[in-house]
Image (tube, rainbow, N blue to C red; front, side, top):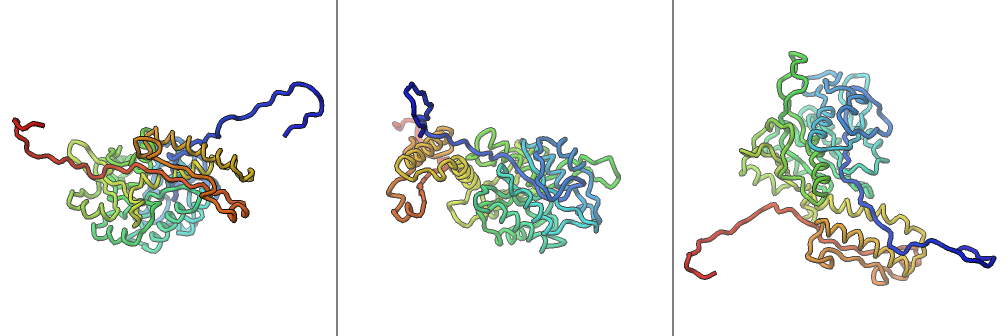
Length: 398
């Protein structure tokens, strides 16, 4: 409180409103993997276009490493291109450390590159384009890199989501076997790979006219575009894959009926509609986290509330603080409900916030704890749209 030592008129400014919570970004992605050049071992720069990437990390040309064409493919560069082509706007690229043996980076190299992304709090989606191509030649490295991606996304307080690729050319039985070893609500698996026109065709006789690329680059761009245009609560599915000429494998409805219940998100080709993302499930065995838009919506809500209530730390832990926090969170959730992110015909059906003596014991207060209980009703996608139609006679009254 200010001191008043002499007579006079004193005017003070005070806040009569609850503090506002600003929603965190959900459209910033990060890719991890080898590139032709560029910095490694430090925090990467933010990229907003393919030109930015090429200036820092080099061209789309094959990597200068030994091995067959598929091993040398510059998957990260191609993923950056399709990321921006599919609506992505902000991207970090964590380059793995180059080695003198001209071989692919090791899992330890990927772990070191992931560590450089740790300070980047705005990263919400994560991928390592091209890692799954090692499934044939080095399953141990493939499994280790995939596990690192999931573990990085699951770190508490980071609010990230990993986009995983099925290996190229695998059968339904093989991709189901891969899926059976995974269980995470912070990751999704996509199958099959996407066929595109080769931007390097004509530069060399060794370059084919088309390429098969991992789907993660496309999906990260579509995640960002959907978040910007509709909101994070909208499942990034039933959307066209820009730049796709086709798919490595053509899946039928019968095949998807096998894969979809197991949480394998299919890319499908439909006559007259093109190549579409036709799945929106996580890899979680918990039914509560079956849909990836629910997981990402909670990431958004939790991250926004976390970063928007830091002001409360070390405030006097009493009724005034509890009421202020309750109003702050209620105002934020009300706006989310108005925007369509939550279920319910009225706010009382969409969410509740409690922060009072019913959520805290005296022991909690003695130990400096403030506990706020929040419940929300998230929107789930209409995965199965059913119309029931029966015969009706024209003279029967309605």
